[in-house]
Length: 280
Image (cartoon, rainbow, N blue to C red; front, top):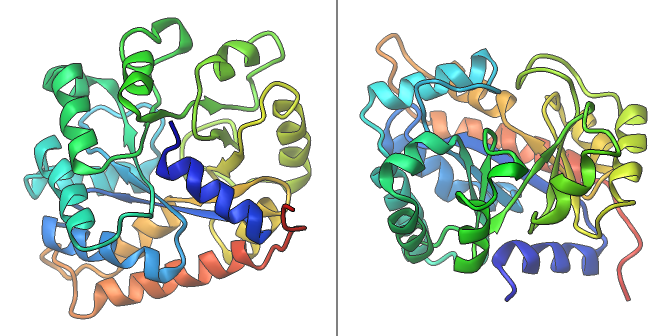
């Protein structure tokens, strides 16, 4: 069963293009502003959308993403509202851009795995990145997700050695998300030479696309990292752009969403400046 994620990577490969993946936090700074951003991402050049599920106790998120989550929770964001955002996005006519939910297991556990997957599929969710569920817990959510037709995307890191990689890729579908730095989101900058070697090593264990995230902040970095992988992910730089458009009351300034999307477009153009030989 092919998902929108699979179809998008097949299309990009045929066109000889690198994927640009953008992360925003659902409900940041409020539901309507967040939806305006979500709806505008494909037009800004985003190939795959990562939509963060706000959670009170993150493990891998740096200060920027944590702050965006706090803003969303204070504005009343819930899992139900996050799924409704996806449903509204699909109802708006976009049935091709993949949406991957990223976050932690606790909110899904509280929702109920079966109920969550049923509602997620109905809403139009294509994949999950759940950073605190290791391969040893695949029966909790990974295998049920795949059975439901939802890609389960796993993270690999600089400390994932050759002994660990087979377990990481075993049940991963959609793509591998390579965390380019050791640490939290937004904590440093990725180095393309190091990433190139890591991506090559991962490709010894899987034929899935490998995208690189954490530490990509500029269009130039998006191009450099996109050149050595199948895609580049930007999150902290985008949620920082959202923060910079808030007024003294924490509300989006008039035209703020449009200005954030302009910055997303510049990042996407960086990633898309990489051209590959198109697949025959």
